[in-house]
Image (tube, rainbow, N blue to C red; front, side):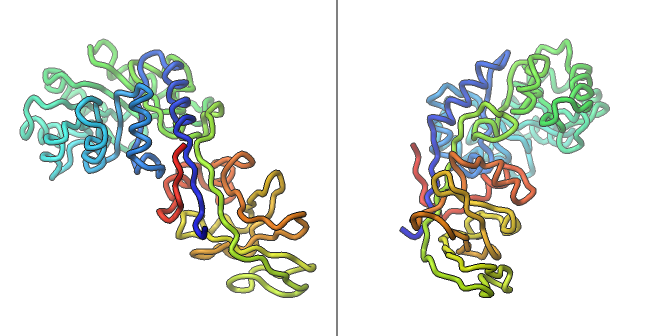
Length: 343
């Protein structure tokens, strides 16, 4: 076997959704954008639907169409990017619910698809998507007459529980929506963990479903084992990899493993990254190349046949730290060449 094995524990995924759903004061949806954070839309969405999820969120209409084909008629599928130009047919035929972000999107939607469900996204300070307060004030009565299915916003600093921005956005969201007889949603994973004040009628967990921070109680969902192609002796003073980036300071044993940046292993993590064989950590040496990585296995009692990058001994967020990034980027970057096993 020359390709890495990516194992995805659907039981752990569903357990994470059930736990967050139980924590929520209302209901929990499920965010499955970006091919379910890189783990495969079809198996992930089907598993979550079996677990009880009935509201799903995607980034763009095309993702919603793919998800509708997978899940069939029942679940609600909401689209964060709203009703973009050219999306009308997709929204209509796949029965998607666009989260409208502007006056222009509202006009486009009610003119092209009168009576079709929609939600509204408000900007409470993140300045990314949604209607600002002046827009919402001007449009609110028109929008409410059309009976939106959900009014939502998104927290900018939910991963930092003590950040003042959280309370500020909560206050703004309440000022913009209190008294309206429409279901509301403010919290993704981080916001869910901030407590009941942030839950409203629906929470929208994403990264927490897949085992990532800030949900420290999540069950791990992903493991990645990479096969060893070859192990060689390297003498003192010899180099390994491109640009002679690593020089042996003593007699060494070097394994070349079958994965690289084409498989989503970020090149920048090289100088700090480790892999594991059992409980033994072994360092990456030299530069991560497109298809191969050098690893110092000097001193191991047995020559490994494969090495663990993500798994019981280091989480996806630990691996992200090697590259000064976040678990989201690691998950969504995992390449198509991995052999995927769904448990």
